[in-house]
Image (cartoon, rainbow, N blue to C red; front, side, top):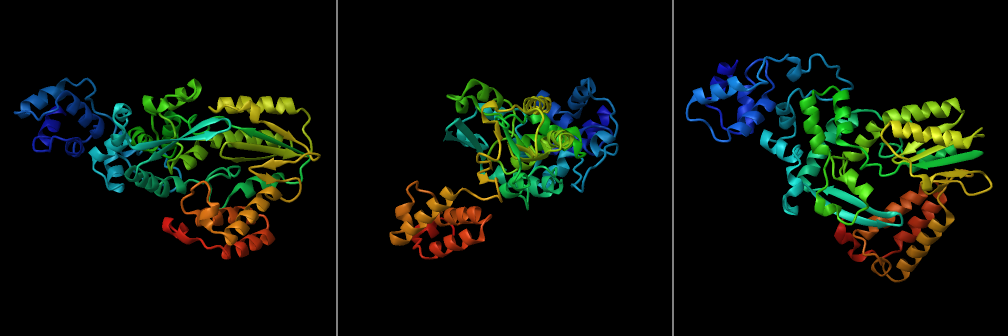
Length: 413
């Protein structure tokens, strides 16, 4: 075995991709792991083939391995996902060399200690009433890689019926509508939703789809990040503890869909709990909702929800739990659901007033927060509010047509 590998690598480029391709011609070894090991022990090419042969002969893990480690013949491929049996297959699909693939996957977390220009993510902190939220936005090259993974793999896996966030054809309205006109509505919030989803749980999703562990590891590296220490300064200790290890970055295009897939078992168990109590259950990202005619013991239900969430690797935000009955406003994801779901009248009135003022002055005058592509932003709000009322949508659109948007077009629309 060692002699065949040494001969195969004799004329190969002394790079990760070159050695991986050479070792891949020899039956019974995992070429990527072996190439990485050889380069670690022998960074420069040997002067004589015998030197490489002696090194390969001494490697303790250089034993014949079942072909299934590379070809995945023994695994069950779930859904119609592309079958990448090796990292070479994955690299070719993503139009990358093996070296580039390893660089972007950063499985050794080397970039955590490197300057910002070398890192793959740009951090952005957003202030909230409940504290700061860290967005980790991938730079253009990695973002395009993640979009390919989303389109070619993740979008082919159907989400659970209860999941409504980040799912094509579903929305805050479809999440809230099943709970309208209920005698009791219970809202529960998952704390630190994206950061709480670790790299190991993402890896489990890819292996469950059928990918070999090595390929699943590379896919996991491409879709997760360990936040550098300098970015964590000033964040609460509990939040920083989650972020310093591999997790789903809030800001990556793959994160929402992966989060839904990781939460699939949570949705299955909570749907079962709801059915056992004659309730309806839906989830929109980190917002969980239950509703029905009555709940015999709300405290027991909430305790059970918390235990299930904990079993599945999530935590409940206790101060955000809401138990809402018909005599008070029942609301989910900004929609009032005491009757037919609708956005609060105040939201509509504020937007109508803004458009009226913008028609009288200018769009720039009303863009007090300096929002880029202000016109697209406003039309997005119109679509949002108009989703539950065609009358409101028509009124707002008529007002928007009277606005001189001016340089709002400079930013895209």
